[in-house]
Image 1 (cartoon, each protein chain N blue to C red):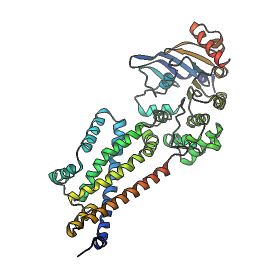
Image 2 (cartoon, each protein chain N blue to C red):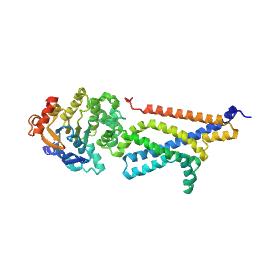
Image 3 (spheres, chains in turn red, blue):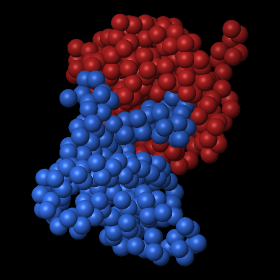
Image 4 (cartoon, helix red, strand yellow):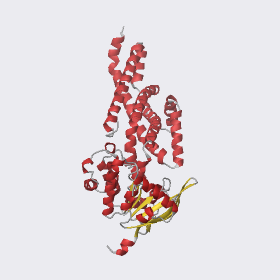
Length: 255
Length: 221
């Protein structure tokens, strides 16, 4: 409501570092996002975008750094607190990761029943509403193996939305999709943005990033090289390497 | 003088009673094996290192020693030493169940490990604890995958159960042996026992296949 709370960051990430063996993947990343903001991570494969998103949710344990949700630091060694935190941070994976033994409805419902301890009838109603929101009401009783890639990703978005997340992390949500199916997932994400969802998304879809993002963050070798408004980063970046990357990727994907 | 046929006719009810004993021993040890094997498998995949090592030793012990040695060790050795007065029948189920738990734990461990890593990640991402993820996401999928391996475990246990006759358990083999040594109709009695074992193997495997088809996930070939 008030501008004071709206301008306070929902999520802040400070000095996140991660190495696998002696290979450093994240070399100290800072990030902060306000309510309703959409930030898009771009950068070459291996830049650390995916590791960063998974570190924010502690699916990858960072070696160093601090993450705060609404100003409160998250302590990953407190298991209860971690589960509570993860409920508030929706995660969308490149490979969907739907639960294969559950129907679309079951996938959306299980978090409500098992994690939020909601009554099954209530959970079913809520899950159905979320599936309808992503346009999959008619497919509610199908299993993941019976759905197309685009449908699977939309179910996974519904699964995350059902828990009322404060932030959504999207890790290349359309990279594993047939080109034909990308549009339907983009449409759902666009609607989310229009509804005011706070999002951090990694993607190679540069046209989509330009249309959606409040800010684009260019990453390489585990650090943020440059960040700013889409037009600035994509067309007129200060850093030579950012310009080079954006030129190549816009040539491929169009503006 | 009795003919092979008349001996068979007279002893069939007696042999069939042994089938029940055999089936109780097999189903009992299969269940015990699952009850113990499931936590062992979960412990071996997700547990801390010392636990993994202890489970490894347990599996090594029960897979490394011949069935007959284990039966004698427990029945004549360990249980009397502990002043535990268990019947041969009970010991048969305990020993076969323990051996089966070692094998079943490895069938289940393989099944758990074959579930893609993303399933665990997605479960954690919606705020499930690891225990919830194992119970609600990993095991329902892993158990489905484990059924073909189990069906093998059933047929192995069925045949191994014949060895418990050495303790005096009145199962099918013991009864066939008993009648044969009384009537000298060895050929027909052991053929008959063998035939019944074949039928039991066939029926059990069929039942497990039907179960496998019933719980198979839609959309998978």
